Image 1 (tube, rainbow, N blue to C red):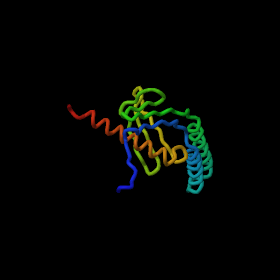
Image 2: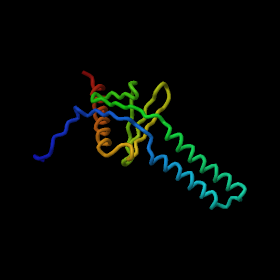
Image 3: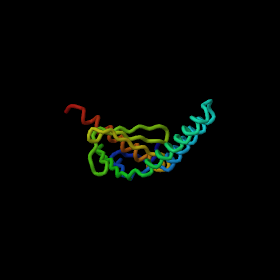
Image 4: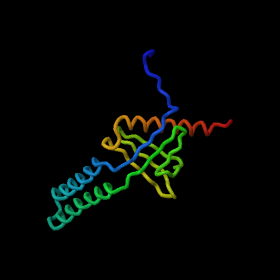
Length: 148
């Protein structure tokens, strides 16, 4: 199309501060509540159902609290495909999309790490920038595999 703006992946770098999602925290509490209600609605005796329901609700609150207390993480995905997490270079990051949710997986010191962006923590423009940066990183990895 002659009037379409040109797009370039040469400047597809991404910088962001990841932070915990309030929507995820609310969903964890809601799941704990629904789990408790489902236990109460089941055929379990009241002596088992009530403690289990309270435990499920408490577990949902604990998971939400743990998620909310996670420290913000600084991400920099350069245009050449190199990802830095809190200033440390990451080898072989993997970005996956599930609708408007984005998941970044990597290994650090032999330990698997994962970040999730929910729509309340990464707006549409940020999701587009992240997608472009990941595509540029994949293209850079493919070019590195080609023999000269």
